[in-house]
Length: 215
Image 1: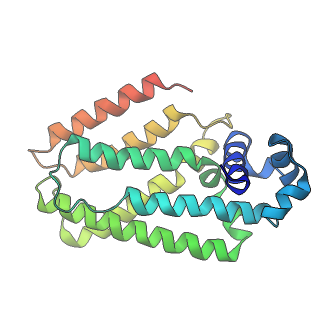
Image 2: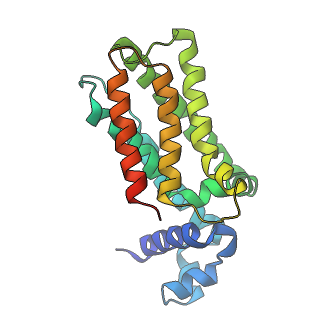
């Protein structure tokens, strides 16, 4: 792995574990046993590192939430979407935990974030349209985009909500699986008689994962 990539992934690990506000470039350099000067050869400052991490985030959103044209709707296909949702929350949890502050410090990053979120909304709306057409959701066509936006809102602020609702400062996988289950509650509310069983199986799947991953 190239030094630049090592810095990006080490930073992501430290931000997730300790919180982005608590980690400096000196912490990152020490974690990698390199001099601060070597780190600054690759990145100007911490914001520069965050922008590179954000590129990983953008790539994941682009690949994880594409419409499923030509594929059969089944439990495995839907698990792919919900797993992508979980992975995004877990892999970039530092960002969701401190989103407003991070974006307020970097106007260019905020523009990229807004663009990425608009792409997510577009792709999510397309997926919901397909699920309606395939008989999995009973929702008015003009309500599909607001429904997709509501789901996106829940996902975007689930971590921040959890951090304000208890004395803990740690986000666990179980906490994030609970977020996935809340999204599934919304889907199940719009399920058709023939798709209820599929969403019930999905609920059981993520209940089991939450119980297996308490930390």
